[in-house]
Amino acid sequence: MAWRRSLVSVSALSLALAMASLSLCAAESNTSAFVKKTVSSHNIVIFSKSYCPYCRRAKAVFKELKQVPHVIELDQRDDGRDIQDALGEIVGRRTVPQVFINGNHIGGSDDTVEAYESGQLAKLLGIVADDKDDL
Image 1 (spheres, rainbow, N blue to C red):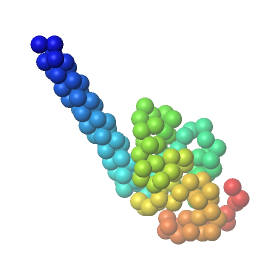
Image 2 (spheres, one colour):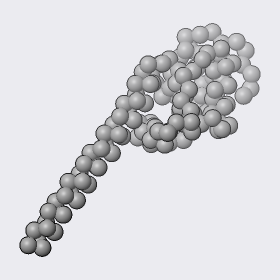
Image 3 (cartoon, rainbow, N blue to C red):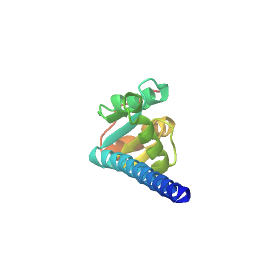
Image 4 (cartoon, rainbow, N blue to C red):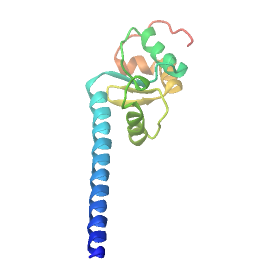
């Protein structure tokens, strides 16, 4: 009789673990879907942290271009860590900032500044850039 109770306990534990695993996969899938939907819904998206100097530098580029990006401040969201993990899966980097233009991944701060200084960023945005200040 005791072995039957053990078997039932093991089966219940296996079922609970399987359900937890499915729930975790669904949460990861929802987070990835959130990232992809956000990127596709806005011309400029920056995944950022409010205290990060590299993020401020990337945001300053768009201020220079008089463009207003859609900014997701990961440190101000309960799911910020999950979003950062999803970014790691999607673009291969967990670091911030991660910048997207018209659905395309531009990169981080250095990549954004380089694209700005070369004029490529203005071209991607379809705008005429004023003289560029060093950032």
